[in-house]
Length: 289
DNA sequence: CACCATGTTCCTTG
DNA sequence: CCAAGGAACATGGT
Image (cartoon, rainbow, N blue to C red; front, side, top):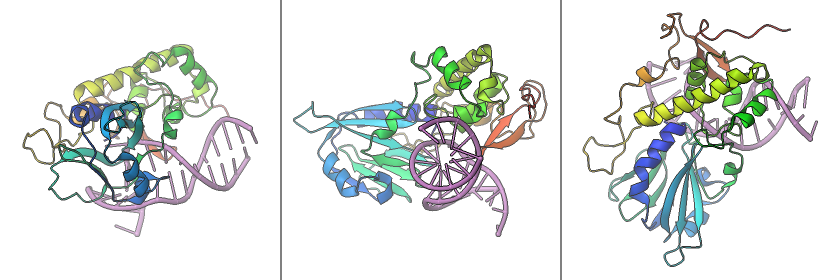
């Protein structure tokens, strides 16, 4: 569920449900989730605070809260969904799901952070934000900076795109998608891309992310634990979204025909992750060895 | 049993 | 010192 578009859509849905809600109780069910702090630290910090805002930065959800009578003494905490994290509100009397990692009791119900693989974070430690590069959909993602960051590295371009200090929020799915649309082979060393290609890639990154946000997320967002529509449940597929495959042109499509030229899509492994590409549309790098 | 999975950090290697 | 590569984290699906 979690690359930039999924986190953005989640934030859009959760924001009106958590803003101005009071945190009555903080429960950490997996201690490592809140490292380097302890669950006690977290409870002490958050309890009785009122949530003021919810923002997304890269793949992080950034909550800002304050004490009841001191709106100016702000406290921030982060949630990162890792690979399998989910965040939703459920009635306070409902039992917590399997692999619940944390739970905030709000006025409206429980804000539950469920995380099967426990790669996610619920933490007061804001230092990860310092390592984030520009937001791809903001003006800070300048062509100049992007050109510089790519032309100073021999890393394969696909691997480079996963570096959150270059562009914040691009993950394994959208890296493949953006490169396919830019017709750039994922194995090309970053410093062999021409300025024109880099500009094109910058555009396809932005397009692919914007499109995914608009569709309401590409990977099914799992809103709503029950199909009933009381507005509190977030599980299952968002109703207004079209199917997952239609929006992903190469990701998870190994051996299927390229939507552009019918060549079978290839899968390769880079940095221990799968990359998908069309070997015809995305011409391989020169061999220089 | 094998291999795969939307991510990040830490440690080692060169 | 730095860039790059790989392991580790942990659980579940196929």
